[in-house]
Length: 409
Ligand SMILES: *Cc1c(COP(=O)(O)O)cnc(C)c1O
Image 1 (cartoon, rainbow, N blue to C red):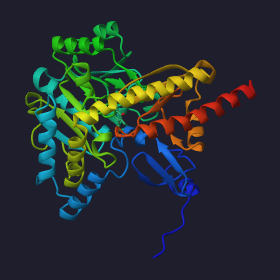
Image 2: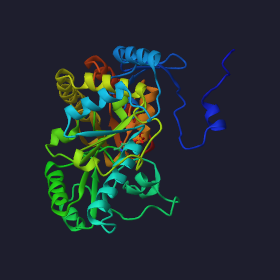
Image 3: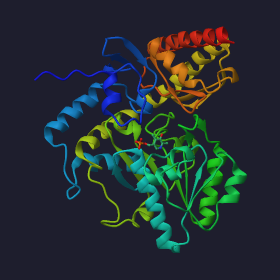
Image 4: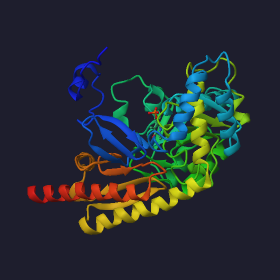
């Protein structure tokens, strides 16, 4: 049977119009290279959205994918399976956590974390200790609960009534945290580095104070490491980089390197507030996802890989600074490990998306983080030559952007 003919126009005909994908359709990928349906090659400095941390088609992941696919790729949670048990053991051994719950996405991992926090507070203090505190500009997913907890009201607009008992405070503002957290607080949820909100790292002192306040008031501290986890910060999880340990941690995105999987990690003391049937999932912890994630954790945990993230960070930032010395398009270049943000200067305010669009034209994939930040989240294994070539192509996009703005000024 011949495959039916499809093109970018098909998207507008048959897809719910929630996305506005690029005219370019990726068809093949290897390492940090992607080819579109016309055979044009791109350097991938986006990693999906901080997902393909080991690059595309990593040979060891492919091997596991095929082997586990041949063996068994689904069992219900009426059974356990060896890949899930091995992955959970490795996550427990590598982190503060004693217990793991598997899900299929970041939003689902956060949903489980938030439900668990509510349940813990309910069991310990009754129904009035229900307040969840989150940060403005934060992003925690798109389910109704996680989108309500997220700090970008436009994503929750028109979906009410929303879950209650949620309030938002400015990120990195210690005084605001002191004023907001009380004995009614059930949990504080925070990204150690705000990803979608503009690649904004937390100050160490801020996370330390959140930890102290949560302890004082019997609240749980949840770190959403869906974007910062699995080596992206240069440590396996960013909390290790900061030296501040949460009660619950969520991880997804890079965990499966593109195969959908998420996880919630916590202590035994907290986990015991969930019992058989109080929460659940059909696919979470399925053997195929777990086998792939196990291999991802093995590779990312290698100290050589993590040290490489720090070296590549320096090379990347130096390259961006060189571009900026020439064109003056950025007012800030920031980030941790290989989660980097370049905030555009005022002349380009709100135009981050145009940089990424021009990047595609010049053969490089980048991301935005809000309207005025260009974000980079490449493979943690990206060869130096691909960083250099990717940035050289990005420089062409910058040059074109500068010329266009100059021409219309
Ligand atoms: C991407 C992201 C999520 C949502 O993950 P999904 O897999 O899209 O549900 C949640 N939190 C953070 C910090 C993220 O970056």
